[in-house]
Length: 173
Ligand SMILES: [Zn+2]
Image (cartoon, rainbow, N blue to C red; front, top):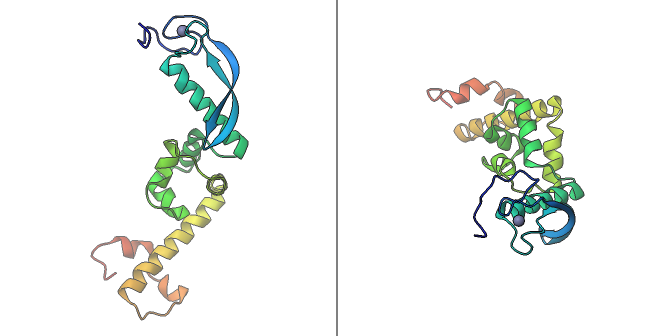
């Protein structure tokens, strides 16, 4: 019966009828734009292609779209994070995004080109360290200003309150 998965999808044979899959240049639509990509096709099944093949082709179309526009893939975004040994939440914050953003990118949400370029900058550890320091400084300032609204906006004064003093719940800040 068509639709039943009878074999594992191995990119060489159709999981439904077992025919050898053909490589073909295809076109699809990603984000409202026409994309040409190398896909797979089962001549035996014709119009009713196996779900695994359809999904594979959709993934190829998206990969090509990302290549065309200089957008990072979920894998490369994860690689950058792992090389920094940082959590998705912390990296989202360091870049100035809500907590979940990095996770969305790793799960397949398409980053814009500006976001991709920003993430690419993190490949250089110095850039990551710079943005992390900036984020922590801003966070300390926000905490101090909230507790002491009248404190002067003086970095030296504010930075006397270290990261340790704000992470400790028993501190006056
Ligand atoms: Zn087939």
